[in-house]
Length: 326
Image (cartoon, rainbow, N blue to C red; front, side):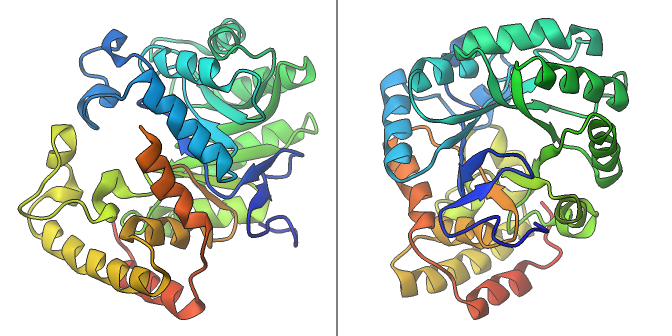
């Protein structure tokens, strides 16, 4: 970020807004009753069976106790199932909730106001903390969307505006359109991890830092590849086993990286996944949002807040994965 003092060991400003968030969040894509989701839904097929409402409640409680106060969901996740569960579990709690427009790929920009009312109802909130455009849809003009978002901010229906999966040029356009109304672009949510470092080379991370936009990093553990749970003899179930992280020679390269994560983690009594998350936390202006289906996963994730990598360790991980892509 461009302004000094915007982040400390435990929290950071969300972009140039007045929202203060923890240095780690929760990705809630697989929360809720996913039996209501379409059969092709990633939440059902990529990450295995969803957890119970009680397990998700425990994941939230563990996270809050560790100081994690930011949770990200979307209307598309399980046809609203994730939002409904997030709304149920966060009611009355001091949590910064982020969600996304639209509800389906068939939506048009003109439906944003109606969709926002649906988001608010499912989340049981009169005001959404962070409202994001889920994708840069070709059939939705970015200036039109930002005008609608700005109007919603001025009407008190959303606190901050974000985007997701925007490239640097699209993000700059969104930022400029909001600036016309005196509203900052708070965030851009993109894939970023030790195994997916495209934001460093495609201009997105540089643009975020230049404009004062928080980069929210989804898939920060590379679909679990960085946890150390998987190997050539122990591949994940579901759609993940067919992705680049878990195929062919990539598994051998992954094993070498996990060994480095274990070596560094052993110095801090931390797991490979915690080291991978910590590397992201120590990147300026980056907020990783790993998923957490239960208390065990939430505890693991939150452990990334409780230690610090030294400069040599950060550099070793950066050099080992420079240019990494799935």
